[in-house]
Length: 183
Image (cartoon, rainbow, N blue to C red; front, side):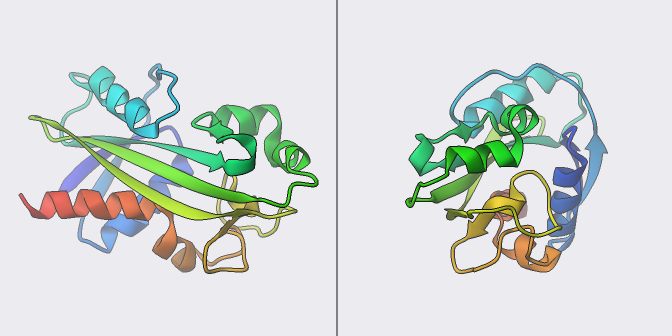
């Protein structure tokens, strides 16, 4: 089976491609620009994106939205992660967290899948904490400051195999695979 993943983020595509290959699912990459709604819920954004792409992308296809939700910052940057990364970067987040001892955070992903008949949304979450400094060279985005539960290393310090095994994206993609297996 081959599905189209609509994303402008090459890193997200490569991660999804690696994970889905494990389950025998091949994906094509469609880089399309389209407006996104603003919402604090990645599922709302992903679902609305599918609605905007119907008729423009041949089904089956999916889109994904992810947010980094930091407890001490009342969920900031949330679904605004890409915008915040461009504006203040990882260094800005670390400055906002200076002196903060409660560093709990979660990456939340929602995948919206359109099979030509209906819309299905699948969610994944990786819980962890924000490190006190950027560490590691792997990954992308906020990976250098996110330490997943059960690890001492940031996502950027983990090998690709280690990160792919515990990422929020994997959790959502596994739910998509379960749905596909039902036929």
